[in-house]
Length: 404
Image (cartoon, rainbow, N blue to C red):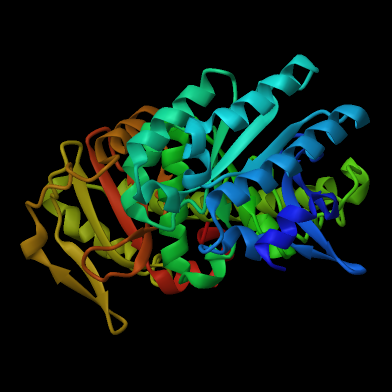
């Protein structure tokens, strides 16, 4: 429709609500407001109107204010608790210094709609222009209790510092990132975003969830909120829990049981490896015969490992590398004397092994030499010397419990 036709027919414009589901309670805890326009007998999305760069921002603000007024009114009249997510781009927010939006919210606060139930969504793209002005306005909004969400997080890694500076309450992550990125790629992105969220105290909201795999992905990666067609499509009614297409509690119960099975299987591997090493501990005769001790282990770790060595508690390698190539173990004496204390968690892990007298399995990481994703099983031979067994990727790939 023509933008002027939309403005002239505001009575034909209504909000629809897409539920947001909590990972904690498994219930609907809020709604995102979207716009629909009646075109004869059909209701069409206002997305093209809001995304059209030729439409003046003032037009968009007028329509958004209309939609928000209806949404606030309907939520109050229906007695619906929870959050109300509203979308605003930077240009819209900066019109009249954002006072129009704030005044509307203040008016409804007097009617009983608490400010901390409002979540203003801005996209990461908005950070490209006039960030300081936008940041100042959003910080001002936050003083009223209004919450801030950043949408499309991860689209531009260069904006991480700006997100940290803004300290939003919620980071929205598009689960389509799973389809667009390679496996290693999205795992790295998710790790970075999870770390960022923890640092700034933000909750993760996964949107555009379209299937069970994506819901599981969101749950597994620490999502506190879920949103998408797999859970519920946008609708005119504030139906709450009744509109959910799946039983979230049942789904998450399945994920928990599956995860527990995988953890149990992974612990079984660790206990098995511990026992193999313990069986040979009586043959440990000190640093001068370290290579002989490792040689005695090669048969027991023929299937799992591709590299083994021994270090002292300061990180000095006191053995050769035992390196498996083309099915044969080779000795690399030139690796003796290397120091690995610079590696993250090396000293912490050795102290834990010394304290608890138990082995440790690392997280998956990329090996500098092979460039493959591996894990390392470490075990305390004594209080001073520690065995490191690198697990090859092929074995990890064949055992799902080791992939997580």
